[in-house]
Amino acid sequence: MNLNEAAAMISGAMDNVVERLANRSKGELGIGLTGGHDSRVILGSLAHKDVPFKPLLWADGDFNDEVALRLAAIAKKTPTVVCHSSAEQLWRMKEQGFRYSDGSCFHSTGFAELGRECLERQIPGLMLGFAGDKSVAWYQCRPVIV
Image (cartoon, rainbow, N blue to C red; front, side, top):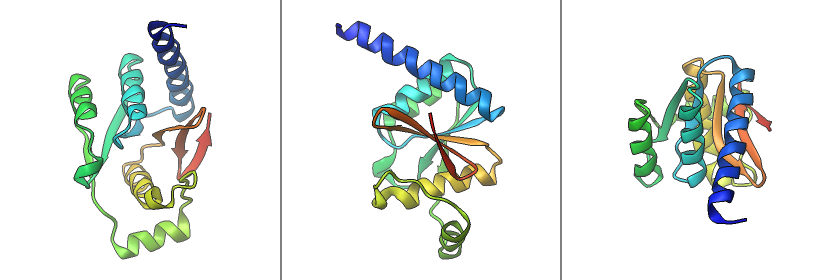
């Protein structure tokens, strides 16, 4: 398989995942632009399939992805910068929410903040990226692995 064939295969697979998640959520999806290539691929598929989505960024400058910001602008989407949670909000998330971090405890609070933002905006699903050979999405603060 050459590079072009591999890129086409990845793009087609991501488009299929995006369509399935859009059908499940029946509404706008959140996309966490967390600085990786996976969020760029997801953003491209969401725009390509004309799925309604809201890009979300962490307030930390080192997590903001300039390439993803340009892609969001091309898709005519304005990202929301998610503010850090207060101590009370963090406690509520711990008590009421379910955080999924695939073993990455250092980023679990950040992902929970993106999930909190979706819940507050009544966005039914949040796509965070790839986890191994799976695509991870949050639904009502519970992960759905597709």
